[in-house]
Image 1 (tube, rainbow, N blue to C red):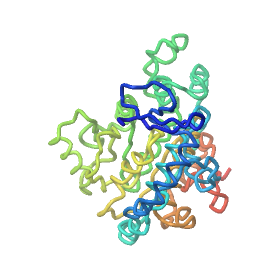
Image 2: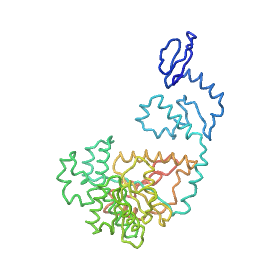
Image 3: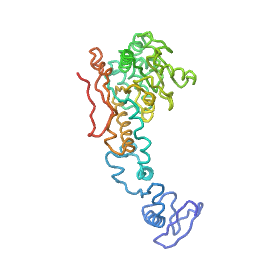
Image 4: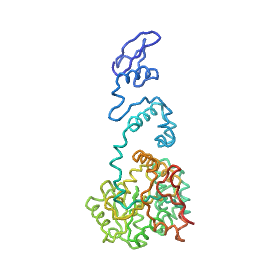
Amino acid sequence: MGKYRVEENTDSGDIRESSGSDKRKIGKRVEDGSMTERTRRRYEGKYFAESPSLLDVDGFRFYDSSAVHDPAIYGEGTVWDLVPLSAKSTMYPHQRSGFEFMWKNIAGDINLEKLREPFENVKEDSLPGIRDTVIHLKPTDLQKELLKKIPEHPGSFYEQNLMSLISVHPSLVAKRNEFSDLESQLKVRECRLDPNTGVKMKFVVELIRLCDGLEERVIIFSQLLDPLTLIKEQLNSLFGWTLGQEILYMDGKLDVKQRQISINFLNDPKSDVKGLLASIKACSEGISLIGASRVVLLDVLWNPSVEQQAISRAYMNGQKKFVHAYCPVTSKWEVDKIEQQTRKKYHSDILLSGNEANACKMNSVSEDTILDAMVQNESIRHMFEKLSHAPRVVPNSCNQPSKPSS
């Protein structure tokens, strides 16, 4: 009968088959690609009753996706929370059914014990530990003035990139037409080489300076290359550090041989390297950056797995020091991204760990003497609003973010 389903017309009792080219509706109804609720009840129940083997195939159980208020899917704290509100409000019934089917049949009844086994007790016993901290920073007056010209929740990638650049340092948008009225302030050399003009830049510079005193190395990850270039210029201006000696740089254009040389320098405890400036896309799986114990993510990423991959370049087998990962944020948009991203990670941790307690549990905690020193420093403590330690956004049973001491 081709791709069309033929159903008896209950009014006339007439049945007639239809091919793909015959779509006349005389004494019958032809359904193309979808079934009504009546058809589903008529055929689906009989189909599954006669084919019990299809109810359970390799650990998967197939369900009827007609229930639209299943608490296992739509309840609080479920996978439904991961769907953006804009998508929920515009989702058609067939899209909702597809969402239900995918979740129930692919993840709903799968035996998670087999998935958990390879991940249990892999890193915890062999590595010193890791701590993830979100640093809420207060933008400078110039940054606030620039941020007012961008929507609070930027929609386009262009607007999002502008906000990311401004949050690092205002001079990064000096050539943009949107800020032509402030061009004279943004283009002067004193502004570009002054870390105090941008709060994220100030945080990065102070962190690297203090880490150097304790012989710890820092990796700065960014999706955008302009902030990395500016950090390189400022470190050279402030401390006289040069590229290839104290500072290493890595992006996608770097050839494989030079990239490996940089990695070897970073991991060599006898080298003069203070830190690595790296594009987050340039550090793929397999790269070991265990010579650094501090990781800064200048951007907030939508995909938590990309962030985790970046942090894991330092937090991997061979690491001898406790790893601290920092994500500085300055705007509500970045905070919202953090919350959405962390909720995704929380649900995936629940899925793999099997219980909420494990998902809320932090790795062994180590005091962050460097961050504490920055927060208590009278000259820079004003730039901190609060600190949120991992887990970033969790149920009420877990610890809440703490504010720096005043």
